[in-house]
Image (tube, rainbow, N blue to C red; front, side):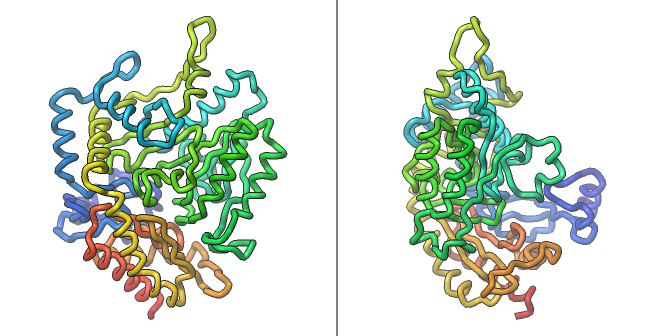
Length: 448
């Protein structure tokens, strides 16, 4: 592996990485994948406990998806998507409208999550301009939000790690203090609150609604913030307030869609339908870049006209509606329908909870274990009583991640949060390996 690592370091700049770290901890070169496991060029296996950045739903080298790609490849690899179309895109769009929350009726194609967010923001802004509401130019997000890393997406995010350096060139957006259930200011918990924290959003919108075109939010789980989880009632209140003031409710379900939270889409937990929904990641089970933006007829109709005035949405990507990606996404939907995935996930999520909850509650450095569906997270704290977290310079999560890799488990952290987001095809033995390696690595780091 060493010579491949040397070539990698000579030519490749890896994402979300301080490349100096790679001098002491060079990249692991993966040769193949099978099921929930990755295998490096030396044959060592790693349980992919984070679904390769949350995208892999049904395991690596899934035979059904492999066949779907091969079948499509023999027909058509790609075609311009302006004034041309193809069967996989048509089928995918129809099926997505059928399964997403009621009211979403038109599908716009892009090729990654950040691009989907850019599309959503631009659509909302242009809609209000074309409806004569020209003062509506601002967006609202909640604190600790993450919506991608292009400039527009960063502008509605709130994590300095990604955005601080770019603030001089970012959009000026409003941030409302969001839910923080672990450190709740109202001494409530997720199970018994009425989203008292929503008053921050309510106050902002009541004051600024004439300027606001959309609120964008990650439904129920703020992923990059450390898998921060909050109750569905927050979404119910947000939907009602947006409707009251003619503000678009944008649901960024890029990370939480496609069964990850226990339902097909996280908004279903609150029984709300957004005006705009962004989808990506699991849509192709980790195989191909693809994202979708679903909107209501009302939004679509504001762009529908002849050439007496230009109302078209002038946004495009070279690989928009890629045929192979669409074919894969259709097969992903087939797997959901034919293999009872959501019910299996409910059983596996309970198994995950059973294996972790008691041990986490008793651990001196685990402040909280939180879980929703097939997402679990351990927040590590310096002091359990005060809930004081570790300083980022200590890189606690990163060091535990390195220990876990030696044990054959990929647990890429989010700061001081170790999380579990495995492929849906994991078995009981895989979950046990994942959990045991996590606790062993945590204990080894702290010398317990």
